[in-house]
Length: 551
Ligand SMILES: Nc1ncnc2c1ncn2[C@@H]1O[C@H](COP(=O)(O)OP(=O)(O)OP(=O)(O)O)[C@@H](O)[C@H]1O
Ligand SMILES: O=P(O)(O)OC[C@H]1O[C@H](OP(=O)(O)OP(=O)(O)O)[C@H](O)[C@@H]1O
Ligand SMILES: O=C(O)c1cccnc1
Ligand SMILES: [Mg+2]
Image 1 (spheres, rainbow, N blue to C red):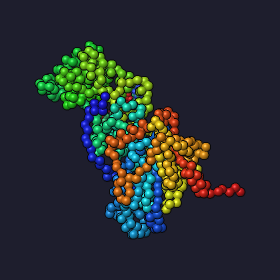
Image 2: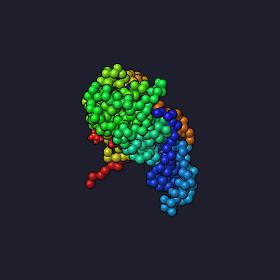
Image 3: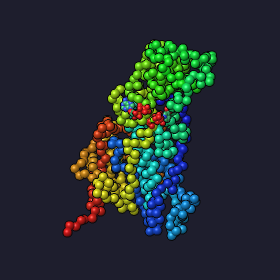
Image 4: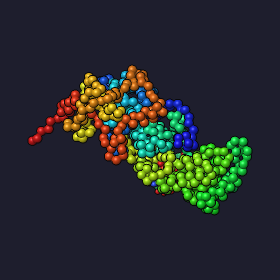
């Protein structure tokens, strides 16, 4: 079944950017630091910062890199406007010198170079997703907006990818999260990056318009409960699809209700008349896209019989209904019961397509629910998922950081008691090494002067901090991970559109071994450094660590 079989429309959207993304979307301390850099004459020191995370989210072993296009656009539009400057004059203490505001008002990101992993690539801890080089004060100011743009985008895209892995390729996944998202902007980002992560559509109409995501939907319980009986169906008619003959659709439905009651074994006086009225009105409005929410009163005794009644009446007039949505109860059991009834109708009236009508399920579904439904067995074709997907309830933040690794060609290192938090100093090159079957074996960071591993040759890959952990790798393919996207004030590499990114993400995930992707205790993917880089890190580590004294 295809994504198009749920009520939908597709709009070829433009690639609009988010107006909130601007220079002032930063923490105050970036601006105070910029002033102090400026005062001490350090503002133009050549700095390199790495943006990376330390641990994959959701107890998984992979992360989907998302949000890069917005980062590049931030650099493109990076300016402090006159009104920004007047605001900053009010916020900063009065002694802040006028020339600093002059400096800010002339600031651009034209002297900044941004290199990054391609958006839509699966990435791993410690390997920089983005490396930014440029005047210290400018790059410092970029820390907060860049982290803001990457953290949630990559988190929610990864979450979506995990739902896709759980559901399987043959299910339709719809994002229904706008009402539960973290504000309007969170809702838009969720729709955009869930699509990148493998969802098929969104209920969010503005996201559809802005990003070209297919918009899809069914109807709510309110639509059903708003009708009490058939007298509320103001117009009784529907036109036959082929010859436009006017037919009393209510009468036709009541005929089908009688026919079906003995076959499906339901009592005509037990079904909700209001629900039948609602389905009839929805069918009149969308005769070829009828998808009914059937759990308002009782799925088996009322919702399902009412749906079949209206669906068969539609069929008699030449239309083809779409299916049903379940939004409560045991989704495994109910979906199988619904499918059985669809099969019975299909066989009884020789309408084979009836058996394959779409069953949509929603209601607080999370990744574990889908795994559990898979184990129990179910007949769901499409999952509508909101809260758990967009709020990333299982883990609400990714924890990307932005760390200074070099100033004026001198490496910098942030030490920590926690070995995981020690940064990898200096400019680095990164490669992904692949095996003969196309699976990714290891990510490898090297010093800039080093040659990458040669194809078919053994290369020693070392754990960045643990001495005993190392392995020889013989790569069948060596892929550079970083590319320059922004240099000398220009975008210098193509930014693929959302549909291309979605395909890229799916392909990138396919290069990962199955055991890295499993839900329970996945095998960590190896991230390593060359021997040279290992020695460099550890020498600098020793050099930077004060020697204690015991008295
Ligand atoms: N077969 C199943 N296995 C595991 N989880 C399920 C199964 N069926 C439904 N669920 C999940 O169980 C939870 C049931 O939630 P809840 O008790 O709030 O719903 P409900 O009582 O069915 O619906 P409502 O209160 O809206 O009438 C939901 O999170 C749903 O996704
Ligand atoms: O459950 P989610 O994954 O967030 O998916 C979105 C939910 O939003 C809708 O109803 P809503 O929850 O607003 O009301 P209801 O629970 O009373 O149906 C819909 O029926 C889903 O249940
Ligand atoms: O279209 C739907 O069925 C829908 C949309 C948003 C939230 N819940 C359901
Ligand atoms: Mg709900």
